Image (cartoon, rainbow, N blue to C red; front, side, top):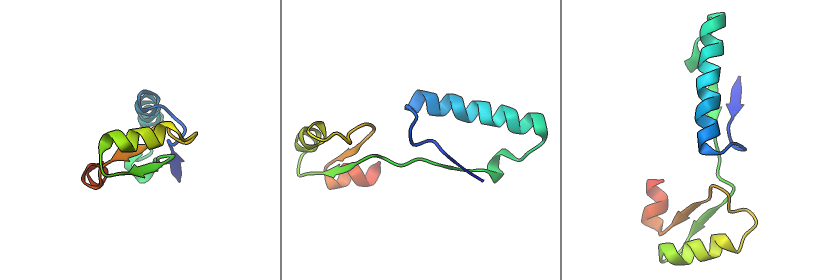
Length: 76
């Protein structure tokens, strides 16, 4: 089983995972046996973080975007 958290705000992701852990405990399931995934709507790489933010702001796919310089994106 894989649970996707892509469409949730980070705070809601945390709540969902806490809830999932509680349900697993209640039924005796190993929480770690369930795959959890997340993906960004966009990855924006530019020479400066400011430029990456400008590009992301112009896109309709900028919610929870991974953005910045190549080094910053690699860290994320």
